[in-house]
Image (tube, rainbow, N blue to C red):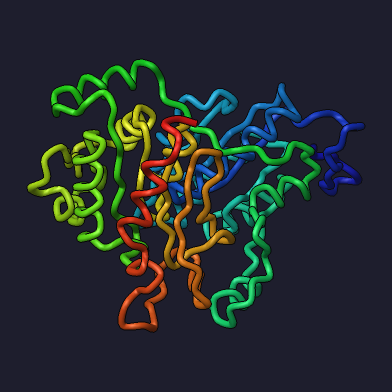
Length: 355
């Protein structure tokens, strides 16, 4: 809460003994996976301050991800453009009119830093990026984070939110599920199906196409389940792995984000690399098989719910980057290529159908 003292704005701390905040803004511009993880903060705030209005600022192309979130009062989409500084200044002016009691910056990006410089009369708390620890982990290969490190959980703990071990949650409506089920029926998809999300923002995180094709043959021959492949229009691996295999339905480029989420919510299981849409599947209640390569627990590459499975080959050089963008120093990506079809098939076959 903002207090005025001799004309100088100061801030009281939010504690159990003070008035509850009436309005809080969360900032996470991108990407899908990080926004999914940020839903933990929404839940934590709503439990501690049930009457608080929670707003969430993100890029417009990701804003639909947060539709139907029960504890969000408002999602603020930001559309980038050629004159971004002007757009950000306009955004900051509109945000100032909201008179937020507190802003939680969960991104610590150049955009959010700029907003902070403009919104001088608003109290900010920033989730700092531990760049030195990351450098040590990626280049010296010493893990200073620990196996249980979770940046959102740690941030909330430091902000005196007592609820721990909260999980990401996304929501789709029954109407959305009905529409996509009708769409899937038109595509001759069985009632029981598995979703595969083979692509990723960085090629280092992609499991070899030949492995996916062999896995599909195992699934269709032994289980008889339909396999639905999801991806963007430019994700050519989707067609590479699905062409010519009976029972594999490639929906590459045919769904928007909400439709993909609804499909994931109906799936028995989902398989893929460390990519946002796979983490969204888990937040929707679908058990996942996460094929992990150049990223690690400290970068968010982990499963969070019972029933999900993480597959990872332990190598001294892993993880090597936050997003998988750093070129591999080897001629072959051992972290991905040494994961065999059987390494994925066995846990996939054994895992529970639903969480």
